[in-house]
Amino acid sequence: MEKDLTESIGKEAAALSLVEIGLGSFLHSFKIPFAGHLLSINQIVILSRSSFKLKSSQSPLKISLIAALLKSLSPAGKKLTPMLALAAQGLLFSLGITLLGINYLGLIFAVLLSSLWAFIQPILFILLLFGKTTIEVADYFIHEFEKVIPHTDKIIIWIVALLIIIKFLMTFVLSIVVIKMSDAKFENYQNFLILKIKERKSSPTSAAWMALRDLFNPLFILTFVLTLLFFVYSNASFAQTIWALLRPMAIGYVFFYVIRVYPIEKLSGYFKRKGFHQFSKSLEVAINAVKKNKKHY
Image (cartoon, rainbow, N blue to C red):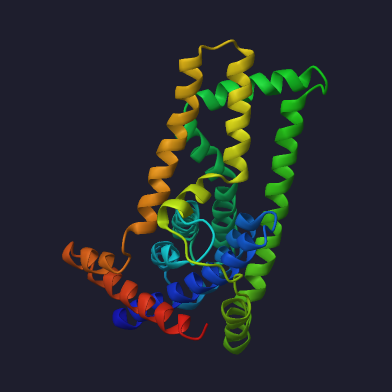
């Protein structure tokens, strides 16, 4: 049974990874709004079916970790932030069904926890890059907006809360539908996202240039501009302003570059040497499945 579960986890992870590569590349190539949340919903829906099908509270985490590693094979779009999202959402989903069980109550908790991550990750990532300056910038501009629109902070909280509720309800309903879906229909759903949705053709570019493109996402640019305005209006010194702006750019660039140049195939052997034999086997199954499928493109 353990061997069968290991193989199943590898196949499920490969399917999730291929959907992420196909659907993710499509969404990012055509600049579809809320692409991250759409991918988040898709992952949670697939994990919901997998957890009920495999009867394992740990399978969503293992599937998500392997899919996160395989995300580095994506031909287009970002890499580091989607990999973090896949891993974190898998962890939160597994936590939910571990605490309350593989049942509908546990599913509600798991979906709620994992749905929140797509809202939390951008904030944490910006905090990591810009540090406490982010809080100072946010506080400054909220205070300025409140001069024009009273209770701006409460309005922002209500908008975010509404978006969280809408996403949770949508994800939970879709999860129930997919759980009850026949194997044949679910396979057709996955095959459509894997084989039919393809990214636009583009000429190969260097890892250094792609890492630079990864860095300049809309949220980073917005934070960069707001931080610049904050230091200008606060009469900060030139040296302080340059350091506050260049430091997060350098840190972000190194993260994105490393994730693009590190060979994913070496990780299977690494996990095997560290004693994670089952995880290593599942990763090998997933890598082979992804490579086999990519030949059909």
